[in-house]
Image (tube, rainbow, N blue to C red; front, side):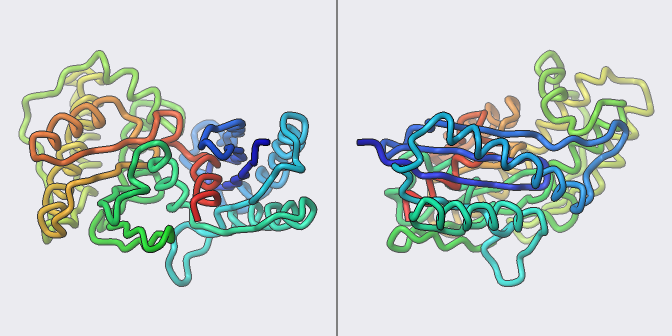
Length: 315
């Protein structure tokens, strides 16, 4: 008889509910992307909360139609952005409340994780990393760009920040450049498609690495916006060059971290990790350094409940 593990994630831009079974197969992966008005580059928390409140009951009803809810062992949720004291965003309160109520109704276990742990869980799924004592992880998205060391302490992940951005996040940078070309927010998927047909420009791009694993990228925003305004280059080439530059940053800090902590297993997660140029460049370059690099499946790079469900099963 199958056992089911439910994961709920109510992030800044997606309402997610997933169910995995005891074989780590995603039985359900339900998502509703939050609506952003044309011309805007984000959502206020109150608007996102309102959409989650409306979306989540629809996903729960769909789950009840698709699986035998009596077989649910654990209901887990993302209750905060990161696993640190004081980490909080109102959007996660929606999923937390619904998950707690469902666990009581189904008479099953209830567990809480951070949104970041959910991304790590999605990457660990079917990767073999659950058997590693420790690994380096990079979480790159619109809201986070952090280099982490993850230690598996008796199936309880300890996550410590060891590097990352000192200003903008990679996802923010990508969206700001995309909006500059009049693409609708969020821009990453459309920019990825355009960049596939582009060429990396042979230009000297300034990079700012601080103390091996920390960096600044706010200067890149003006740099790439000026490339666009100059009208000297094709937009698809500018996008390809932007993604290549991001990959170069990731390569440098990841190698530095692996040397510093004597670890050769790396997991790269978050929405930006779905980008084809970034993935291809890092897999190729890091393998030359003897580093094994893992990515989630492309559809699990963006916000989802699968990683939260997996964390609930693993712990």
